[in-house]
Amino acid sequence: MKEKKLITVAIDSPAAAGAGTQAKLIAKHYNLFKLETGMIYRLIGNMRLKNPKKFNYTSIKKKIKNLKIYDLENKNLLSDKIAISASVVAKDKNIRNIVYKFQQNCAYHPPKKYAGSVLDGRDITSLILKDAMFKFYITANINVRAKRRFKEYRSLKKGLNFKEVLKSLKKRDKSDKNRKYGPLKKTKDSILINTTKLSRKRCFKKIKAIMDRKLKFNGNL
Image (cartoon, rainbow, N blue to C red):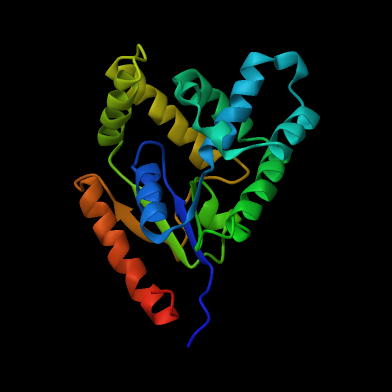
């Protein structure tokens, strides 16, 4: 009988492509610890906005050291203003290095009750989990992504119109793909999943089929 390997799933995607939703479904189905890495940068971006005078590497290290997962579940972090700030701090190499260590620790040392981990972000397949058991690049048409984000903001009663959301996403895409450190890109060994015409259920079904084949071979299922 093969020894069960730690299941590691790395997902990269542009904003509002559906990666967060798929990460949640994967985590629930396979009993994996889930870390939405973008929320860490939103948290730091919020620190920058709230207290710019005290915003420095020392304060960030302290925050990350004491970070609890429920800190990342604050819906106030989902504002467009914080998203832009997150994109700014994410360009800083020193900040990324602080965050990297936390992410890798979560990925390779999840709580014992979990069979592994799933991380979604911008540079998970290329930097954080290069040797992940599964690597996915999830994307969708920019207009479809903008509609999804607009719907999300409307449910949270955020006062933005569709054109503003679309403009913001285009700005985020440009920043994510062109930053010097940890840019968003599809690695050669990542499986492309385009969610433009896929429902959440159909998308997960596609991912599950891919994962199940390998997990059965590895002895995890």
